[in-house]
Image (cartoon, rainbow, N blue to C red; front, top):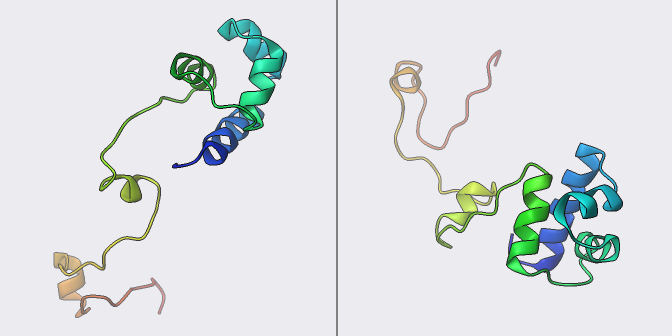
Length: 103
């Protein structure tokens, strides 16, 4: 994620999945309920320690990765495969051709 909006959306989705209220997160992190609501809504950029605390309570981990590696972690565009597996080779598939079972 690259924007505050993407970050807050990820936190809010995790909050809903964990079924935690902003008040519960506030109690667990030592933040005020208002601060938690503002962070989850993307209205304010949290301090790193506050972001880490909220993420931890939501079962998330903040991780720094090189920009070059980020697309592969977020499901971004990937380069076309140029190497075939043994199975693909035995099936006579060519590089760039997808195989769907039952075809």
